[in-house]
Length: 435
Image 1 (cartoon, rainbow, N blue to C red):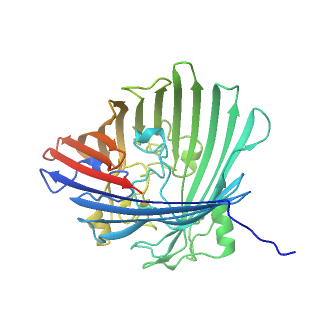
Image 2: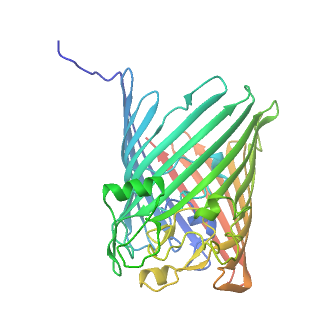
Image 3: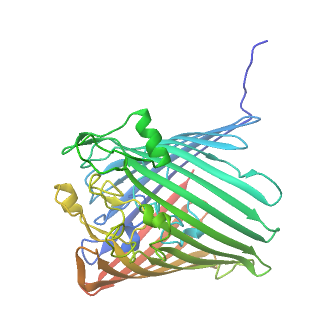
């Protein structure tokens, strides 16, 4: 008897959005372009995005596909894809082939999208991602979640053809229906590729095993070379406590950054993201508030051995934790794009910063509003401190109103103050419609 599969449901949706920005200078306010998945560049004045998504539902699984294309001025490549992916989904696994932006969490209020290493500041990279669609339940109290991926850093880099390995493992502890604790570890590693100085870097299966396990091994076939880990390794420890109360949902979290062995043993504590989030049960004018404190100043300190980590940078993979000259993770790093473009080192002007960030959102008479404000102090690097320190204050506000038959209209405003640049002021008018 022939085996046939017939879809039970087919869904398709398409959308379009565009925005025009008016600025007092050529440069956009910080929160206009930051964490926009590079749909808006620092010097963009106009952007338009088209998207289409479809899904086929079968009895035991679903297949999704999607494409998002944007066009904007003020960047090197005006027309690019954001998303281009195919997904397979069943009760326990989600497999993604291609490029797809990270899911937005915490009502879009977080400065890092609650992920120190993948904030949505850069365009999504192409690859293959396998992850738990639902946590695997061990008991009524414990469940686990996992993910593993391979990406291609296919932009114009000092080291060409860089592979990116990723994996994560998390443990959920459900004390009862209202109390939950989640602990997770993430690991990224840039490896392989071709260096203009060192030639072909190690990329065989044995090398991948060493990368996967973060084993100490000779990274390059150079006589007298010091043993090290193959590739550039980065990671995070995350801890989150969630309380579901009659007043609403509370969440407290800490995202600890790991650059090397010193970070693994918490020698760089308290570096990372400390956050608290509250979403009232009866939301109205006010529907969510968030506060985050971000610190990258310690970097395992100044020591003879491991220390002065200079986050997101690397001596071999000189573009560091960037993609298309955009910081991939926590956006409060100052990166010299001109130096990176012309191969001049160092690329990072400041990797040491302290940031206070607040986000609030709500709705009034059908108008959805959002406010974000970030106070950042940039200290430079241990090797090249900034004196005096650079102080920036980034502010953002938006008002959105949806008309069912016409679409959503959004007015945005931003103003940035600093002790070293003229004040940046910008306004934007955005239109979005889904079919």
